[in-house]
Length: 321
Image (tube, rainbow, N blue to C red):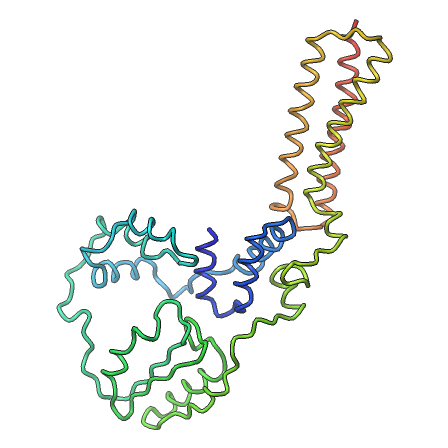
């Protein structure tokens, strides 16, 4: 999952570069506040990520399987095995390979893979950090289209869909559309700001739900209200409650305790505590972090233990000789 998230993130121009580094850092440490930060990222950023409505996954796969996929390509199992050595990947090839043998392809055109002869105006722009196509793989394209009105522009540190990278790429694009026969002014390329790993506290709060981007200084208040403390509180309360009940019964009834009722009491109590403990684990996944509803649910779980302790005490008290 981490590999896929990183791969998809590399394709999104809206994600600041620092997010990838922060994501890896937090996933590696995986403390409670890191888990909540990553959960916040998924809820507020990745939740709306998807293909545009104009994109047809079926058409994409049909063309890919018919024209681009080689009969000698690796199998899905081979590609999935190879992915184990990757840090980031969209895993598209492995997904395509899973349907390659059964996909109804059309006849492969004979000129697939060849550059068509074209001498009219053309603007080609590419980001130097496009994860889907490294610049060195475009050398043949650049050498083929060299007519006077054909221009290849590299946007420094640009990613996938370079038009979304900023005003420079869009200004060059607009110039070409206005007059394709004029050499566009590409001087803004030298002024493109380098990758910036500094993120404001407002952006950090929007992405990860906290002003502390890297999570190296989790606040004490968040630690106090973190759901994990409720879970451990359930176990502690379970142990203390059980101990208190046994002590109370021994004082009231003497030292004789029937083994069967005590065993059933112990078993039922442990099951209840574990159910409450595990149930509190899912609280942040269904309720907003630190919301009052989260506190109420956690407190309700502990209240259930208290009520159950009172009922089990009465039940056990009636069965102790």
